[in-house]
Image 1 (spheres, rainbow, N blue to C red):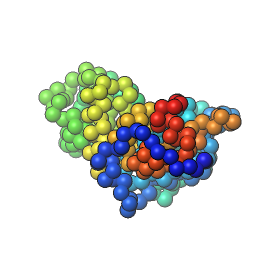
Image 2 (cartoon, one colour):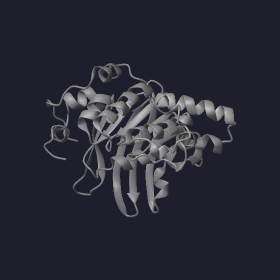
Image 3 (cartoon, rainbow, N blue to C red):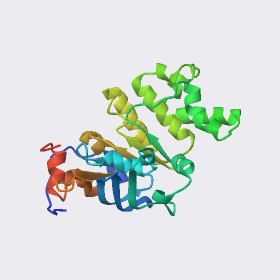
Image 4 (cartoon, rainbow, N blue to C red):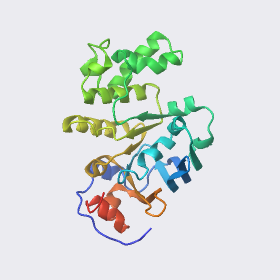
Length: 280
């Protein structure tokens, strides 16, 4: 990593983000230690070390193909769905290495995922939120309470409370994404992973998602992948810049810092070049 103090011309992160990144931060929620990742023989990530802080928003930024989404999917073992993929190293969460965890149902309950496009079930708004809870054997009254709580937490209740039996896909794109978030919240995770959750949304819906993240981070640890530099500067407490190594074509971590520092005083020339639009 090339170390050199430089200045950035990108707008400063918002006041709320600055307040959350003052010295004296929270404990580490997830510790990523020397992680390599492979799709068959192809190495996608090389020697990633990163500490995700509890009840903070961490953004992963970098050009397409640098491994941001791959790293995100490692955190709840979504890569298990891809034949021939494997991770090496350690990802520690609550004293256990995620990479060797056996109870994936429990892992994914604790570390939920929100995808780029809303992944709704072909069922009602109510049933979309309560689906996993019924699988866990919850009573009908408890499921109903959790559905209302989750929709309120996702800032969607007032918009749908009178049509809970309507199909989830009848909602607008932004509402569908908040419904996906409500479904994630229903099982009361400790960490929420978001893979470009607003990239397919209009500006108003994007702002609602960002405002929602700012509220949720009071209770949850959030890790977000985004290509939008302004979004990262607005919502993230910490930002990790990733880049593909031109020699082995594996994604590497170039720089990780509080968002204020990374955007205003990047230590690596490559970081400044990316966030100011010189490449990427």
